[in-house]
Length: 182
Image 1 (cartoon, one colour):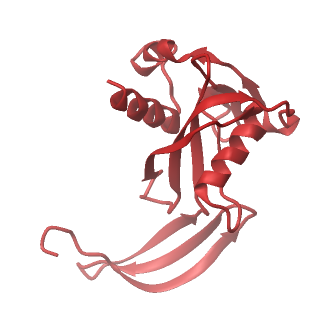
Image 2 (spheres, helix red, strand yellow):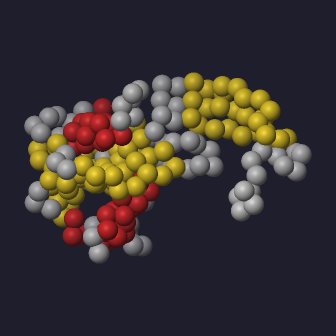
Image 3 (cartoon, rainbow, N blue to C red):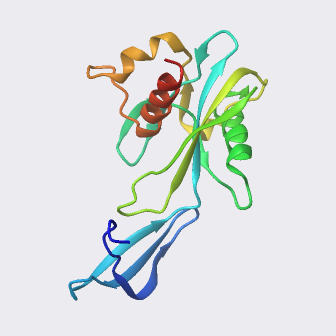
């Protein structure tokens, strides 16, 4: 295809790290220029995120502590696909586990690669409408606090300012949902 740039040729591939959820693959690649370089790829099973909205118009947000950045961010529930699990089933499971709510109607908003420069993780974002309490307990190991907010107030979190959302999946989910509802 004349419009797309070429790929490099993979000369070798080895496992650099094997973890519970992610693996790092190290590829030696010959670029079209002939130069040989190394690419480190984080292999990920895929993930989901859920913009959950209750029957009375509240969006189910979480305050979650993130070890990797040493900060707590406000965001939507999310999680990793288990082997053989569909994104829809994962979304229903994660919403219940992280919020204690059951999804009513579930509809895909978007699917995208989270950071294709170094990982193959593909995230699918869902809108879960008419969420109702399921009576379950939130796992204390999750390091999260449920923080419901009127969906109408989300606009103030999208632009620059002290309360601006800094979580990409949350921004994408809200922007797609807001775009659809305009």
